[in-house]
Image 1 (spheres, rainbow, N blue to C red):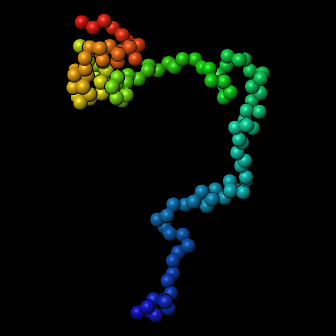
Image 2 (image 1 turned 180 degrees about the vertical axis):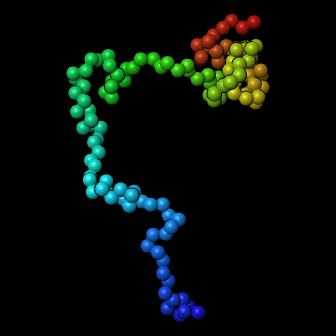
Image 3 (image 1 turned 60 degrees about the horizontal axis):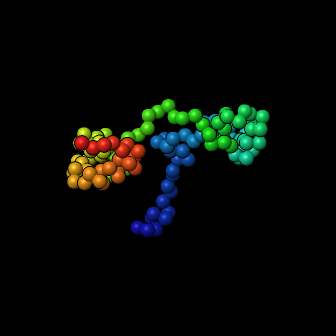
Length: 124
C-alpha cells in the first residue's frame, strides 16, 4: 500500500482556483519599484519645526486645544463607564451590584468619593 502511494503521480495545480490572487500577481509593476519608508526622525527634520509658530500643535510639543468631545462619565467605585447616577448620593455607578455597594456606604465615604471627583456637594 505504501509503495503504491510513493509511486503514484500526484498532480497539483500551481495555482488553486479557490485561493486569492496575490498582490504581486495582480500588479506586477508595483513589485519592481522599491518604496522606502521614512523614520520619525527623518519626518521631523523635513518638517522644519523651528519655523512654525510655537502655539501650533505638532509632533514635538504636547500642548493642544481642549477636546471638543464631552468627557466620559466613569463609575466612582469601579472606574467603568457609568450610565447611571444615584439620586440620593449623586455617585455614578455602572451596574446593579455597584448600586448596592453605593447604597451601603456611609455619608463620610460618599463625601470622600465625591471629593475625589471634585463634585463635593452638601448631602441632604
